[in-house]
Length: 107
Image 1 (cartoon, rainbow, N blue to C red):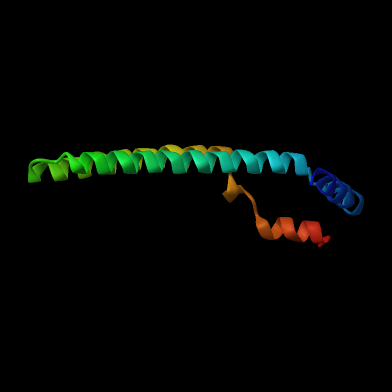
Image 2 (image 1 turned 120 degrees about the vertical axis):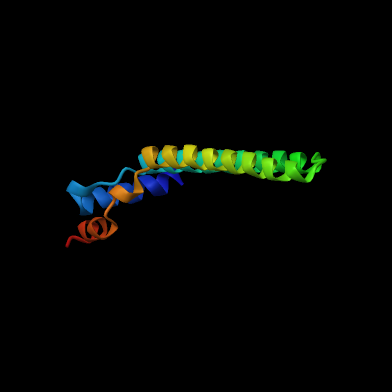
């Protein structure tokens, strides 16, 4: 796989000398992105299990609303945390895909 990536990277550098593409950096970024997605999934699963356990311990109907409110807040906090991390680490909005594609095509 590494030889294939190096060969393709060299071909891109030869064809577009000013617009070389570093596959080692892209691979590292993809692995970091996948690790972050896995961490998010694990946090979501943990929160889901905790929610189920808490629902199982409810004794009064009024506790149901308190548990729902607590876990809704926790889920929003978790979503905000990972959303901020992903935006800071992987600024996808900053990439203009149409410009990048035309640059690679030589246009």
